[in-house]
Image (tube, rainbow, N blue to C red; front, side, top):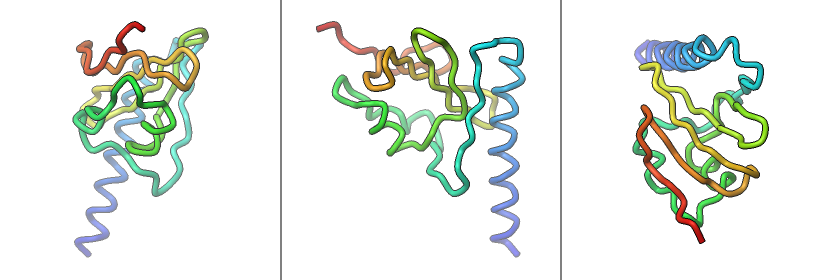
Length: 115
C-alpha cells in the first residue's frame, strides 16, 4: 500500500512539473512540450546538473538526468527540465551537441568557456 501511495505521489509531482512549464509558455510558438517515456530517469534536484563541463555533450546529459520536458527556440535550442516547485533548468545548445549554458532561476550553473 505504501508503494502504491509513493508511486501516485511521484506521478502527481511529475504531472505538476510539466503542467507548470506549459502554463508559463502557452503563448510561445517555439515552445514544444516533449513526451517523456514512462520509467525514464528524471532529475531529482538542480544539483543533478552540476557535473556538466565543456566536454559534456547533450546526449551525455540526457543519459545522466533523463530527457527534457520541453524545448524552445529555433536557432539556439533551449532544453527545459521542469520541477514540481515550478522552477526550471534551462540548457542552451546551438546544435544539440554542445552545451553553452545551464541555468536555474536565472542563475548560471555552467557556462562554456570560449575557445
